[in-house]
Amino acid sequence: MSNFLIMLSQAYFSKLKSKSFIITTIIVAAALFLLANFDNITSAFTSESDSKEKIAVIDKTDYLFDPLEQQVKVLNKDISLESTDMSETDLAKKVEDETYKGYLILSEGEDKLPHAVYKSNTLSDTTVSQDLQLGLQNIKANLTAAQLELSQEDLAKLNAPVAFEKEALVEGAKSSEELDQARGIVYVLLFFIYFSVIAYANMTAMEVATEKSSRVMEILISSVSPVKQMFAKIIGIGLVGLTQLAVILVVGYFALVRRKDELAGGFFDVFGFGDLSISVILYAVIFFLLGYFLYATLAALLGSLVSRIEDVQQMVMPMTFLVMIGFFISMFGLSNPESAFITISSYIPFFTPMVMFLRVGMLNIPAYEPIIGIAVLLITIVLLGIFGARVYRGGVLMYGKSNSYKDIKKAIQLTNKD
Image (cartoon, rainbow, N blue to C red; front, side, top):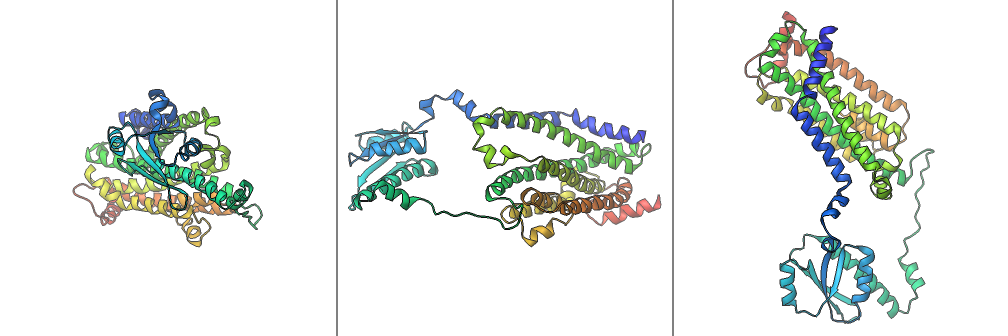
């Protein structure tokens, strides 16, 4: 046991002290902090006038500019309209030298309703043109109502959305608002699980291959059994991953909590952070850990078969595809988590970490379903661990070019000879 703990601490602290770990953690944590305070940071470097999109307006009707300006102030405070009598040639030059974002020509059609032409250097930025169009649409609705002698009350009734409510017949089922919030938080955590499992499982394979290629493995197996080495690396790198994620989550949490009041009704509500369930976080941690151990065991097995670091990515590529397939199934399930396909996929071990978490996060499923999923994962990890240990014991003794899965059989034969 002492040898195992020595290997575990070596795997953990060597990665913890590495420059790549420190730099990556600092960069990601800083990126989260900057993202949470992005608008405050950008506003510190730009004046209010510089941040506004200036649009020149040629009003040929003499009555559309004022109401449009009022509409745009409500729709987008970052757009500033300026009435002008300049020619289009002069305005085109102003747009070209970026004095104006673009210019708008307002006129009246044969139906006595607004007609507009918007011109700018490029049409790739649709936000400004869409807001201008929406403002004119509101003005057109008011003018049409006046032509038809409709009162403002009649117009309000005409534009009012239909009363449409959705109610679930199953007791305890989530409302549409709760589903939208759950979808947001599950979406974020699925990305978290996906990238973390890929990153740390690949790190395990790379660590095994590095020691083997440098011949350090030959020294280690003389004092510590290969199986102890394998599980020490898996657990050690897993602890490194948890340490890194804990730092990132703490920084992200405090960065967001500091602005909770400002983000209320926006980020927190859209992504479900305003009413975050402890059980969802708990399940996220459980399925992340089980998913990591499942794929890290497989990665260690595959990493032991190669003698060159260059061959690692090719060997673990099928494993990466399995993670990607599970992730894509989960993305599909965000819109239809109750489909039979999603339910069945949630019990397939290599997809369970993400797909079962999706179902737990979005649906009120019986407690025994995630428990079954966890049990399936644990059994698979144990079986894969037993098989992986046999392959690992022989694989670390194999040298030479190796990029075929046929080498698994050779590794097992070497283990049986020991």
